[in-house]
Image (cartoon, rainbow, N blue to C red; front, side, top):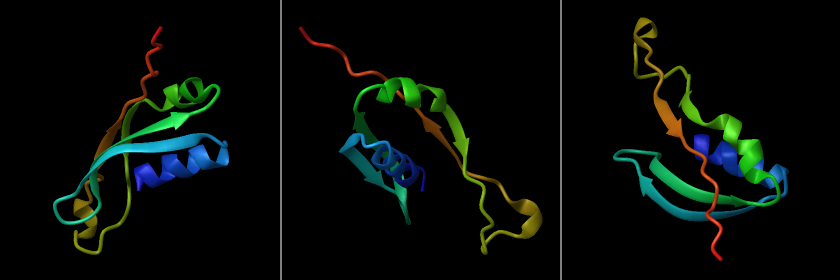
Length: 83
């Protein structure tokens, strides 16, 4: 869900995206992903997103009082300049 959100954000800002690697989850979804967002000021715009994101949703499999939102770290790093 988080990867799709950021890929769509890149599309809306007309940045090029390159999916470098992704690991599928054990049962469903994606365990981890690595992608590049290429474009002018992409790093500056995304650097404010660094941190842990909590995905809050109501699961039909968990009782209402026991909802624990999963958390995902999000890291943004600039591409190194090679000369």
